[in-house]
Amino acid sequence: MSLTERPIFSRAAVFLAVVIVALAYTLATDHTWEDYWITFRSSKNLATGNGLVHQPGERLHTFTSPLGVLLPALCSFVTGNQSDIAALWLFRLLCIASLGGAAVLGYLTAIGSGIHKAAVGFFVAWWIADNKTQDFSANGMETSLLLLFITWSAWALFACTSPRPWLHLGLAWAGLMWTRPDSFITIAAMGAGVLIFGSEANSRLSRKKWLKLFLQAAGICALAYLPWFLGAWLYYGSPVPHTVTAKASIAGAKPLLGFVWTFIEIPLTGLFKPGVLEAAFAPSNIRFGGWPDVVEAGCRIFGLICYVVWLLPWVRWQARVCSFVFAIFLAYLDYFPAYPASWYLPGPVWFGLIGLAGLFELGFRHGSLLKKACWSASAAFLLLAIWMSLQSARTFAAQQKIVDGGNRKNIGLWLKQNARPTDTVFMECLGYIGYYSELRTHDWPGLSSPTVVALTRECGLDWSCLLQRLKPDWVVVRPQELVKHFSSGLGSPGLPYELVRVFDVTQELEELDLYGQGLLSFDCCFLAFKRKEPVQ
Image (cartoon, rainbow, N blue to C red):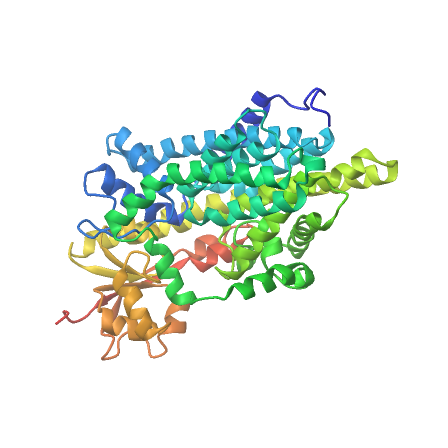
């Protein structure tokens, strides 16, 4: 589309559409992700003067996103530290506004890239309808902030008319680093994609000029991110978040060559086995089951298409860059974390949708038969996305009411009432239980506990060995974890624990007719054990 053509939407219309849909989704679900409460415990301690720590007196970097912990701390401080819910809603509103800004920048990027107006229209509709983008932009995670800086970066590369695009790009890159320190992978992928596909003939800049722009932007990024990098190093003793250290302790080192193979293997085998391709567009944690096979298959097909667009030379270069970043992003998430966490995926989804729009515009511009095929495929994908969002909203509303707010939060409150303030508790799900219990936590794999990380080097994945050395006062586990990790049960001489309470909402969930029941069932029951003898 020519830049002189009338845009298909106004900027205000795009902003309002995204904000209204996100706000409606949030009001319908009231969903607050488990990990928000892990981070907010540090946020609340900072806002109340106890330092940016999970446990007062222990300087441990128990969060990953600097903005994801500082903004909730600001929200708590602004609300007088009187209401966690008020702080959460203020943070939600900031995130929803960020999502609206990201939508406008993404829209301007698509227009500035010259993508056909019909493809731009579907891109905007697809993105608004994406279930994970809606959920994770207002459930307490930093996702919408990440999307804001991703779209700002893409706009600076593809559509910026400023005489200093390097300044915009550098600030956007710095925002990415402030949002997630592993964003250097996204930055590198975007830079590599531009150098590969953005020749002087199609991008108006030579590769030498692109490199100069990237170096200037990198300098701005380094200056803007340096205060946090140095501050974290001085405060915690390392700029590397302890969350990364804890997860690495169980994942182990992985060679770079394995990542290259994963990048190649995904499009070759992705259609024939569950994995990262369908995870990108499917409802959160679809691997737990409970969704129709046709949903998984449809998402896998669209994921594969987005993954390979960069290989097609007749697609415009901006769309190829975005498809390339999508592929790199998915391969990284598939290889290093082994399976992509759902809140990571809205970022690559944005890139994938731009790539998909670049492919579909070929049909919109050419023969009538191809045009009809593109209209049909676009509409089918949009209808699937809308249906998944509606069903996901129902599922997450039930999760919040029954599983999270109705069970895990209650476990934390029960522990606060029945445990001594000096007691310790071991569990895997650190968020709700850890926050509301206010106890010293030893979680798996040790996000809040350097002791667990140290013992893991000795015990490996053996929880029996871990508890014998850790000696927590309380243990909270799912029944499946009890079977998997404690073959002789909790109650042997080395593990002197007694079952004192069962928290089970299985019956309430079984009465519901929902898709995605597998995720809810995984967290429906917890067993609380108390140590029978004092620690010597």
